[in-house]
Amino acid sequence: MLSSDVVVIGGGQAGLSASYYLRRAGIGHVVLDARPSPGGAWPHMWNSLRLFSIARHSSLPGWPMPPHQDGYPTAQHAVDYLTAYEKRYDVPVRRPVQVTAVSRHDDGLLVHTDTETWSAKHVISATGTWWRPFRPLMDLPGRQLHTADYRDPIEFAGRNVVVVGGGNSGAQIAADLLPHTELTWMTRRPPRYMPDEIDGKALFDIASRRADGVGELGDIVAVPSVREARDSGLLTATPMNARTLADADVVIWCTGFRPALGHLAPLRLRDPEGRVAVDGTSAVEEPRLHLLGYGSWTGPASATLIGVGPTAKATIAKIAR
Image 1 (tube, one colour):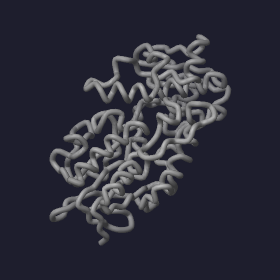
Image 2 (image 1 turned 135 degrees about the vertical axis):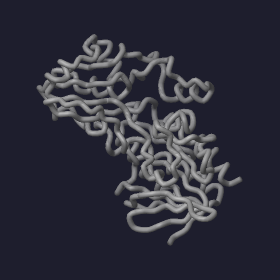
Image 3 (image 1 turned 45 degrees about the vertical axis):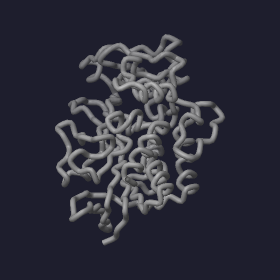
Image 4 (image 1 turned 90 degrees about the horizontal axis):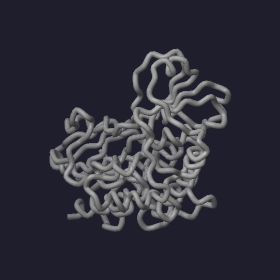
């Protein structure tokens, strides 16, 4: 059995932010990442994806993201940045290591993997949500995909494609497909665009000040591709329609993700919605476990590049105490 003061599960943006502050605090730790290469979920995003903010407002602690030539960085730019960040701070990451379970043991926790077992005083779960897409179960004749499966519009050229979902991924993917397909964009309610001047930095600032979040501002950040398609009058949404879904060649479900917390099952901490009750980021019923980067319930904007740093800092300060 191996041991470490802290075991961080996940080597994406949340795991790297935790490692940065653990190193600064002089706390021994290891980062276990299931992916074969750096970048977390970013290598798996669709090709045209753009971040909500320019590079300097999309940075992890300690080192700003280098500028991107077109303003709003691409997913590949984020991958390159996270890869360089990992090297810059000599993050003690091991990959690919699949964590299968976390369990209690004496005065600590055990982290079980596909190759070994670790003993730790504290565990930081930073696995995110990308690996657990929410897929509606519908019996349809056409091909069905999720946001997590989509890469490029050329694959669907000339096809009858329905995109379902009124959030950012639905709007960006619909705008991406618009010039290449016979597109229908379906949403449960009319799309709610945030003011055009709103970006990720503004959203983080608002979320950090307000307990009720930013939901009333709208659901969609109008990045340049979405703004152009919207203003052209071609990107319009229609209500949900079962017949249209049945007639589609392809349905792309942009229906979100759930926290990837299956490895925590032995601790029996999750509620019926799949979440863990937390005080800050510490599990209420198991304070040696910390959840980082899953969304607003684990810190304001903590699932974003700009938002995860402050939450990571507070988490490590609590561990150090």
